[in-house]
Image (cartoon, rainbow, N blue to C red; front, side, top):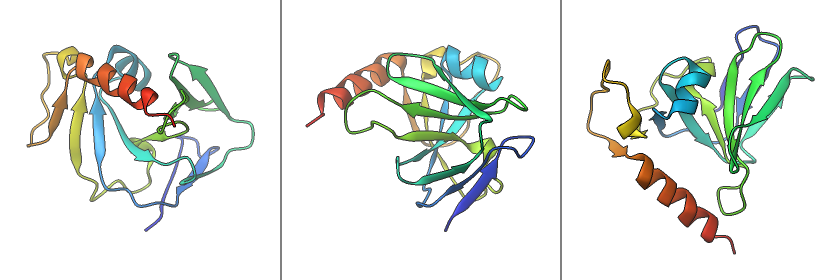
Length: 146
């Protein structure tokens, strides 16, 4: 099943051509500032996203291993993309809220659980990863380059 989506104004449209099985929530400071709250995203392989945006999408290098894309017309955050070398290079983490129909995609994990503000908690039995665990995973992924 293909998923479609767009930014708020519709200038940046996209199609996900690979199956989406899960979503993660991130509580890190950058994601909270970028999204205005909890950042929820779905993982899409580098060849699984087709974007029709003209010149409205710009990227911001938010860390040495990732960039964040947004629509310059309306300001909507669209995706985080892993740019560091390794097996995750080019992987997109597309904002769940940008999908036209995010129904049926289960929450399977939370990242930076130790940075989550006290004012909310997500229910359910899913993986919860601390910042230390996340950074270890990123480092392991970068080492996995062949």
